Image (tube, rainbow, N blue to C red; front, top):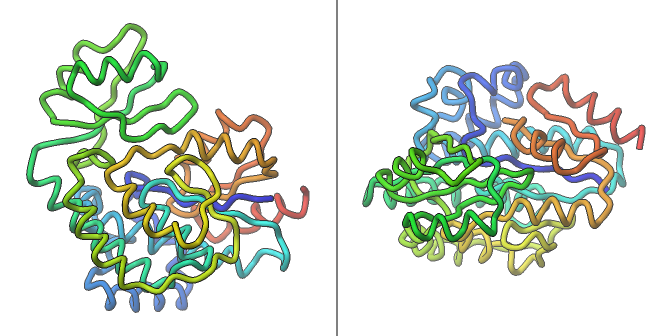
Length: 304
């Protein structure tokens, strides 16, 4: 079984969609989604600068649109009957929900655009942020964070945890971290996946109750606990996850337990492949950053 993984916020880079949009049909698809959302996804994927695409309200629909588009290209290219499963990191769960068939592409994009706006609004209520923590054991980190008034937001595996909270507390923690721990501030404008996002959960929940849910065509893993999630629980879980820690480490543990034979990360790719290389030793990976990378994915599948 091959896992198709969809990245989360922070993976986007200026111009990352340029090679994909050289294909007219891809550009036309993104123009249609831009009209649906009222967001110029083509410009943000090609010419917008880093500051612009860091804006939560832009970053989230841009990343999901890119993931769905590149995922559709990949699915069309893979041989019929290729055993697949899907997983997404944070906002990437919307990408995974669409590609697995639980949500339509348009519903996934509409919900994620609302999610981005709601999380941006929640972030504006209190100055908060996020930092990556490297080299910490979870058992020692959690009590240290509680003492500092901070929260664990993403357990990414391979020794990486993302913490979140008020900016002053993050700065103090960076100045005096636990022994052997590195703290790196992230360019994220809010304490995502913590209690600071509760208002966004309420907003998203109301809209999510109106969408149509279909039976998944492929297995789908949840950030909640790394398990395979049933179709009826996909949307409630990804709504609730806005204010809960992301357990990507558990997802990778499940991949290993289930004996996956490879991972393909959708654009903008790199972060999840990097984690897999450290945590899933011997599992081949492909980062799909240009259309040329599709051939590497096909080679991986044919060589398994």
